Image (cartoon, rainbow, N blue to C red; front, side):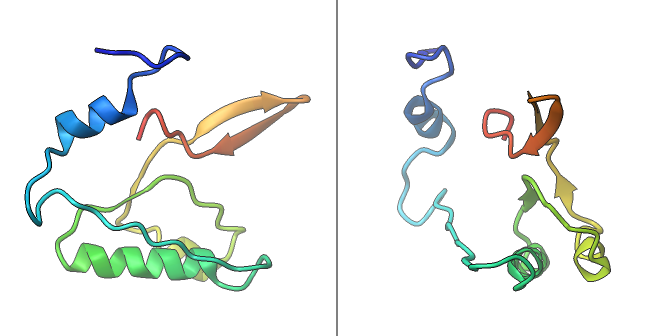
Length: 103
């Protein structure tokens, strides 16, 4: 497999191999949830939309969720596939983030 300058697989090649272009097939949608401040409902809205997609028969996985220990948000994680986050050590603490390479 071709590699990018940083040694990772070429993303364009991966897309062509895994998602061949066919009319109206293999195309996903990107939905972005914006919110200026914490606590305005972005995570809840994303998880609610994910459950609606799952109910429609679509395959959905959560890449990284920061639930902030909100019970309603945590409840929406039930039954959802959760990807393992990437852990990075930084100044003596462990940070968790979306693992793009694993996804």
